[in-house]
Image (cartoon, rainbow, N blue to C red):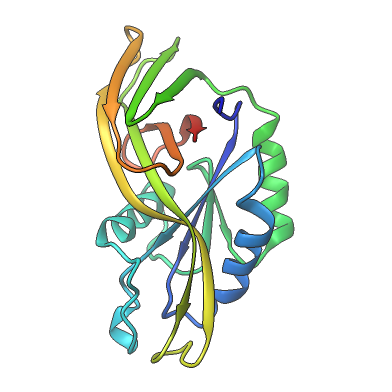
Length: 213
């Protein structure tokens, strides 16, 4: 399958232990994950694990990513459910109208980085170019399509919740300054989708994104 053209990246920061998260998880699952114009990524944080239920999808790296966004935006704290659109705009995950408005706004802007991604088996070819100069990072992300979880303890005890586009692998492939065209051959595992992001360092905006099956 060809890569998605100029998609908008929506990151949902959520937790199985968060009582406020199920409505955001449901909106994310039903309205965002199957869209061609959106790359929807669900990142489960670990900072609610202490209240009685350990989120089996959580990774401290995802909590740190959210904190990096908060520092870049001048925010003193993090919360769930939060959605971040193209690494720039922050919104409460239970405000679908605001999320949709931000997606429309970002769709109207041409990405400053030209990104071409192709895949053959476990090999992913990444090429990029830009007139920008600065500290950028190239990320490779993989996710699970969906999974139902029976919550036995904590704030969501007794519920069976379905999560979608659950990130289970996030790697920084390379730092890039844009001065010369980028060309990377990366290896990946499994048959699931692969997402490539070019993003400003330290919680900067997402400058280009592509998804290949």
